[in-house]
Amino acid sequence: MIKVRDPARLRRRAGLACGGLGIAAVLAAAVPTLVSNGTIAVASAARTATVEIANFKFAPPDLTVPAGTTVVWKNADDSPHRVADIGGAYASPALDTEGSFSHIFAAPGVYAYFCSLHPYMKGKIVVEPAGAGS
Image (cartoon, rainbow, N blue to C red):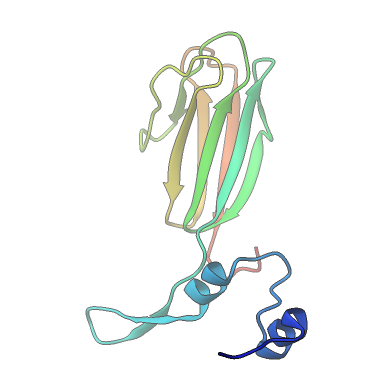
């Protein structure tokens, strides 16, 4: 049996003091995986961003995220809302109070959306390449 006198010191020396990140998240971001064509890719941690629907507005109305981010819309209004991409790429069902809808933005670009029940409610998701410093 190994005795550890100072576990914090051991973690620091092992490089595992991750500033609040879980060890699994750090390992997932650092462990390479073999892709089907024989190349090696490093998986990045999944990202999520939230848009709140409140007072018949999207907050924030414009959001910039890296490719691969899941955007979650959460309805905090007393009225139902439907999130719909202007280009038709996605559309939510009617979201009641506390309801949510998510979509993964895989490709860089600008994605305008609106509430199909209240068309004056508009927003935009700007998706940058994954390594673009976000």
